[in-house]
Image 1 (cartoon, rainbow, N blue to C red):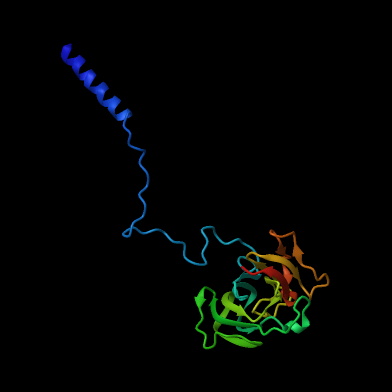
Image 2: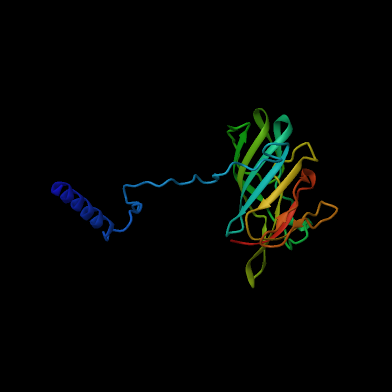
Length: 230
C-alpha cells in the first residue's frame, strides 16, 4: 500500500509540473534561408477558370490589366464556331474616331504569344500595329493570346495624371461577327462607352464595382474606357 501511495504522488507531481509550465504553445517556425514557400505561378489562380464564352462556349473573353505607364497586359481567350487555319489580327482603331479620346492614338500589340488548341504556335513576328493575317500550322478552334497593348491610352489632364482613357478591342477579328465578346478591366474602371453599339454607354453598375456589358457581338466590341492608372 505504501509503495502504491508513493507512485500516485509522483504521478500527480509530474502532471502538476507539466500543467504549470511557462512554455508557450508550439507555433510554426519562421521560414529561414533553407526553407521554401509555395509561390503561386504568375497568371494562375487557385480556383478553376469561370466557364462561359471564350472558355467553354463559342465567344471571346478579353481581360485587360492596366499598368502604371498606361499600357495593358492582355489575355484573350477565344472559342470559334469552326476551326480556322488563318487568323486576322487587328488593333484598336485610331483615337480620332472615338468619343472620350481627345487625340489620335497609335495602338500596338507586342510580345504576342499564341496557343492554338493548347499548343504553342511559333511566331516569326510578335508585334501587331495594323490589320494582318496570321497563318496557323494546323486548323484550330480554341485559341489563347497574351500580349502587351501600348499606344492606346490618353491621359486626361495634367491636374489628374492618374486619370486616363483608352480604347480596347479583341486582337482577333473572326469571320463570325456575332460571336459574343466580354471585355473586363482589372481595377480602376470609371466608365465605358461602346461607340459601335446603338446604346453607346455600356458600363454596368457603379465604381468600384463597375463592369462592362457582357456578350457584345465581336463586330461591335470596341470599348472606350475611363479609368485610373494603378
